[in-house]
Length: 141
Image (cartoon, rainbow, N blue to C red):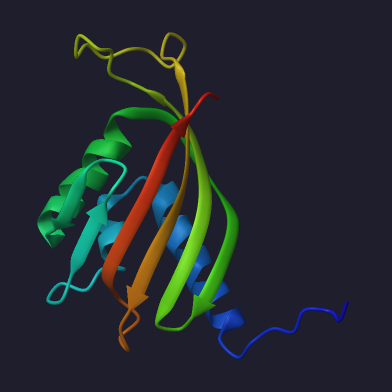
């Protein structure tokens, strides 16, 4: 079999993706939102049954996620696409900081959680996400 050949957008999408993951790992909703277009924007989280969320709703969702999970770690499994579209396969491990009763749990008492998923991202010429689809499935850690 012939060796894989990088396409012309490969290095560009990998570098952009690394910046995106770095923003995610920072735990800052503001940094995440820097990747989202403020005018033309649709974000759907099909695993969470939330579709066509607005810019402000997504920012609130990131704020909620970053404040209600301990040890939130994300790992890229694969990334494919081109400058205007990427498909990103990932795994997230974490511990939910809120119990079923709504009370906050310590990192030590929080149960582990594992999510696997794929995110499809459509990008504009300004290098901003205009459409995002998350497909997520919870697994046993």
